[in-house]
Picture (cartoon, rainbow, N blue to C red):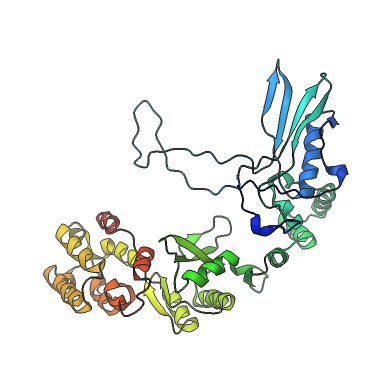
Length: 429
């Protein structure tokens, strides 16, 4: 959460060299020539100034001579840039070198901020402030959010005493945390506080009878602008789970004019039920005021019923990538390894250049020639996986979409599917 302090937010672009200075009392502000008896004393003083100003600090580099620290830096936590590490995407390496591993792309807060304090060891006795750069090139953190800044994550003496007294009363860590949360801040207060700094921020949540969080939806001003521009076709997927609370992460995404995915909202669900998806879509409709023309999901029946209930005028489409991924499991190993079958199937499924009549004719030809109905590996109760899909052509085959939306057919395809070559590999696997 950002703090709209005493500066023009229209020029705040992180990393663009804008000098942002928050005025604090002179008793907290470092000045050149200020003396400290130790590095820890100087760091505590600069940390207190940072807390008052709204940024985090960290202990930076130092220069040593004969085992004595001569110079010490305390930079802003957003100083510098995240180092880029190269790796071989194919995993190839020489025998003499270490193997390369793919790394997760993690976000970074570094934006090249130059704010810092430099200490100089003087006369072997005290540390003097030799340089002080006050201007920042990023937004400051709100006072209510400073507890989440790494350099400010610590308990006060009062909080430590409270935890000690609660432990003497035989209250476990969970109950002690709940009491501390109620006293200092709660989930509801945190979300409500963000509205103070972002007027166009939307959020809703739901709890069960035990006051346990079971559903959350949120969308900020950027998400809303994305929805306004590109929200006629959206996709949401519930295949993600958080590691700690086992809640399902449900991002709502769209495709911009550069064929890049943009977020238009997100939610957390404790269960994948019709009631949960219905609530989530109702909150999306409440926040944005209008429903998307096309909603793309996987083959989850709960999603299907929720979309039909909340978005009755929207077209529900299935993600073809999920469907094609199941082909290898449904048709059996023989057909999966048949190059002619894979080529002919992909040529009619991944294109929109043929007519619906041609598609059905070629589809039925494949069914007959490769004896799909007699495939023992297919689902007999549904009459075969591929054969039963003939009833859902309008929901996932691009050939049948030309009557739907013309403006974003090509963009929707990039949202719904990967390159055909990848799906051939999936079928082979």
